[in-house]
Image 1: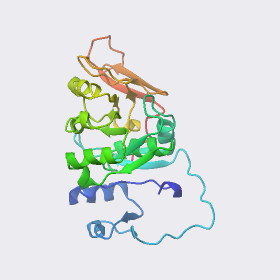
Image 2: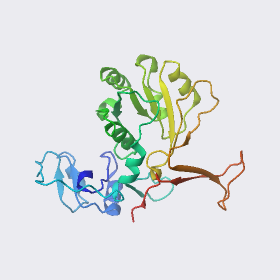
Image 3: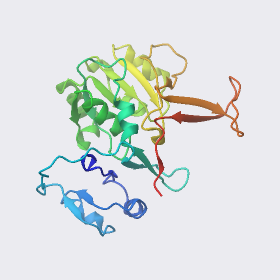
Length: 272
């Protein structure tokens, strides 16, 4: 999809029919790519459907490079604060965010890809690995759903970079794993989790950012045990964070405000 200059819209097969129909009607995709088993769920889509096993028609000429400012993907918000919105992220946003290796990672990284494509954690997993020559282990959903099977896969595949939400990482047994870099995000991280993983020799890094800011806007240095709370980190290069009041004025230190994100990671906007 990306090589053709098109944008991809990931739809998790687990979504209810109403959500699937909404995504199709709101994003108005031109082509659907799916499997034979799932094609029947696309009744609301009236465009061409490409089945995954179909033979490719290879172009005899090299495709032009996509425009850096064109949309790479649309990932929809959950809709917990209203109507779901499709976040349009450009090629430039992704290349900038993952074109520089994150500090604290192994020299020869082996990543897992264990999150739904409809969750932008997957963007981090895929491109932070492949853009730097790392190995990417695609984890079947049946394995991610089983703590024991997932841990056995991490050991067997020599995974040394693992992306997880704090709640998912909390279900794993860190002392059963070889030292790895644990990258956390998606929700607030309890200090106890950092203590438990660092005590077993793992590197723990926490990140923060909504889908609108290309996966993450702030990231920590490797964390150490004993902190009362876990920070969200400092802004990544080319990004700035501001805590402002209702009149967009900076609030004094210690005063509650709204967190604003500025910079090159902020995406194009919402579809439509």
